[in-house]
Length: 151
Image 1 (cartoon, rainbow, N blue to C red):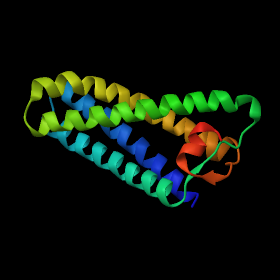
Image 2 (image 1 turned 90 degrees about the vertical axis):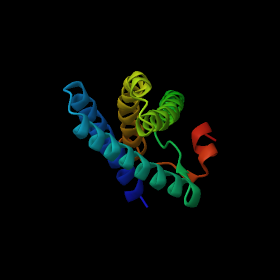
Image 3 (image 1 turned 30 degrees about the vertical axis):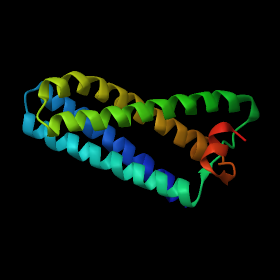
Image 4 (image 1 turned 120 degrees about the vertical axis):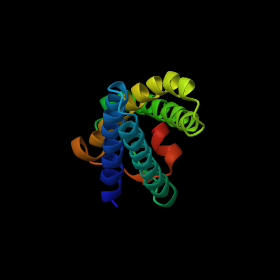
């Protein structure tokens, strides 16, 4: 099951890259390219979410297996990442709804914030992945709330 965290992290990176290019294209006035890139970015984010939640529900989350002296810092960082990701998801849905309903002034206003938050969220997700699976051996896999709280 170690492939699932790598796969879901890869989807987040792809999503962020697509959002970045989508933002670039709207700034350049390429509305059609912007729309396609943003929809693909949202699709990859949704695939990430499905993989992440499936793993969380059926397997659990991996607790931090690194040194005790950085455990608190890791959990504070993880909490920051979770808050960012949640805000980004809500903003993303609202931004997409404004676009689908052709409320482009509102879409533009919130879309800038959404993109920035998403472009901050994705790298923090990669850092969490690296800390959990690359730098340190993962701890035990257990239910989500236990892993988040460090129990």
